[in-house]
Length: 204
Image (cartoon, rainbow, N blue to C red; front, side):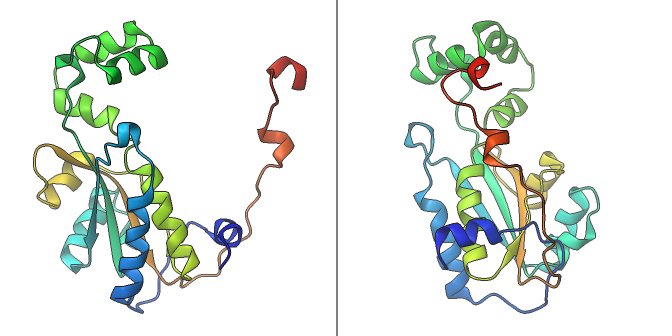
């Protein structure tokens, strides 16, 4: 399948066949995540491959009791390492400088004073698995598989279910399987609705 075809065909699928995913296909799909970019080339993502029926049910419960999640042959747990506490880094640390520039020093100082340092780190790392995760979603679409991003998730509970160490958090789930539903056509905005060139006022 051509890349643009896979991009256009990808849908959020919430109903799956019981047909198993061949191990070589699953490994190919997961391998796509390794080629994603990351800030500072940190590659601080981790992905759990969940096939155990009881674990899948527990994760579905942690995701707002969305029982359809457990029907997928595989659930990918999209995780991140929480290794850096920004409050303990020197002000000239490049990551600190970048975040001061992006969000302002007042906001960073506010976050640095938040008492639960693990949850502060979880907040900062929320986007870590998103780009490699979308690589997985597109590689799955290329193989005729359906996926769905699940962000409605009790992060503490899901991390406990998976017995993750203290410096790792499960931030999203991605059920994966062969679709048992016909993907519906969805409206997408036109390019003209999502682009501007050079200066907002010149275009709007």
